[in-house]
Amino acid sequence: MDPKTRFIHIDRGRENVAQRLNQRFASFQIRENPKPIMPDAVTLAFEDRGIPKLVRLIQHESVETQLASLALLYNTISKHENIIKLLQADGITPLVDLLAAPDALVRQRSAAILARIAAIFSGRQAIFAHKNAFPAFLNSTTDEDTDVRQTIHIAICNLCSGLQVGDAVTRGAIPVLVGCVARDIDPVKVLALDTLYYCTERIEQAIHLSLKEGVLPVLVNLLPSQNPEVVEKAGSLLSSLTTHIDGKNAALACGAIPKLVALLGTDSLEALLTCSEALLNVTTTLEGQVEAIRVGACERTMQMLDLELPITMRITLVKLIGNLAVNPDGRQLLLPCADMLAVLSTEADQAGADDIRLNESAREAHRLVTFTP
Image (cartoon, rainbow, N blue to C red):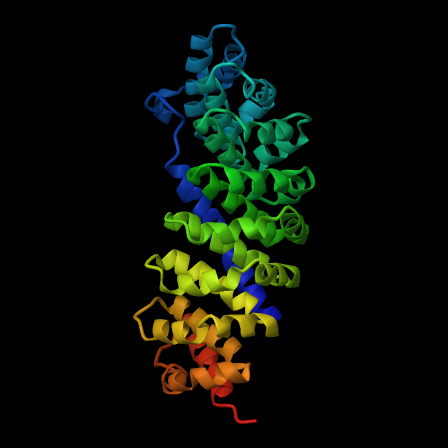
């Protein structure tokens, strides 16, 4: 892949990280949580004095007291400044201890508060500075309660979405996340796939560790899933892994290309985009091109190009045609789309950035398709 193209892909991925994280976290609430306390109902005096008291109350021997205090604390730290006050009151230590509490609801509410702490920079710093916090997070991914596992994965995802993602990678997050993708239920799979995407998109070591843990065969097995979100996230991670040559080779070896080509006809636009980006990456090698042509990628891509698709999707398909046309067999199969490429390569009036990218990609693909040795 052209290094410039790779960096464009990475930059666009980073732009989506915060947006995807905020969308998921905005709809998340701890289980059986009472209605949130409105900011104007929480006085300044309570915030200054009440948070240290709540930190003490969540350590109470009564489960009922713990649950009520955890619910109130979760609502109270909806404001950034109150998370800072909670950190100043050393709230992380008892919350981490409660991840091992006998009551599942106590564990889940503690994980929810820690997830909210991990959503801000200073919170992530404090969690990684705590001796026992991150190991406790990883241990909770095997909790017997589904809600606890799902909530702690939100916390881990928040930790890995920031600048401290390298700390998570070096402290053993990758093997745990790959295991969750392989064995857990779909909602947890989706979160673990997102977290692995954030890690591999920013830290090259995470790519090598993921491949070492055997993530590629796991992803290939997920591609035929009936859950479009699982397919989308698996394709997204596969796209990130295949920016590296080791990822391209591993994808080819485990039979990813036939399944990616088959997904060019999926009804989910999100899954179609991520899987076609992964296919674009693996066809930058000669072996990848040969295999993709063998399983019908040229015919599928031309069919998709005739459809009304978002411009970002069309750009990816046109670039894929360019990759396949490097191969003489692919060039011959793709000749029928030369006229379409010629039309797409014509610059439109008042063209935007994506229109320009489409024009340039179509022009290059047309040159390759019509190339005569």
